[in-house]
Image 1 (cartoon, protein in one colour):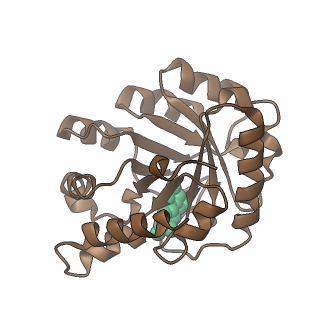
Image 2: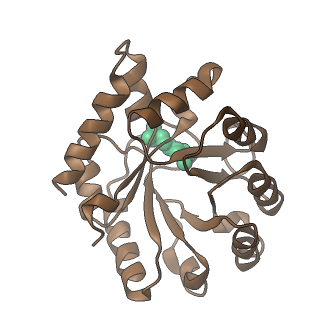
Length: 231
Ligand SMILES: O=C(CO)[C@H](O)[C@H](O)COP(=O)(O)O
Ligand SMILES: [Fe+2]
């Protein structure tokens, strides 16, 4: 099990105010977030359309130095991988069903100097990891179906997390286990106990702030950390 101090919180900017994106990212990092989770949707692999490499580049130009965790929900993936490497991504994760050549896509990410990850939808089997454990730096389990923020955590993901944690520990590779979808103050401890070490939270963090509380980010990030300390 991962040490408590190694837990990372990654606000999903999908729930940020896009008209004030730079400011929102600055504020949430100043409040103690570790990683910026950047959701890329193409209205093809998932039924929604969001932001691309130009926005990632703009955040870097704005002065963001924290790791940017790019979650690609696009098909095909390889062209976007090259563009996000160039745009300053730190992690690039993709859904294996969306790549014709999973091994090649992982290699492309690492060759570009980024950390590589595979994302598993609720019904996608972990067997996609079987022959590529040595090529992944991150396993991301979706605890909602991808495409939208603000959905409820699918409870069956807890067992899948335990299975993924066992695979990672047995591999002896240094691989982070990230969870994405419906993570809140009241379920994060249980999610950590099941094996996750990196926690995406979009609506939980950004809606706290937008409810006219000027300290909303600080409050919810402190609550998430306090809950993690009990895991
Ligand atoms: O990848 C995603 C959706 O496809 C988002 O990262 C995820 O939904 C986060 O939002 P929330 O914490 O509100 O569930
Ligand atoms: Fe995501």
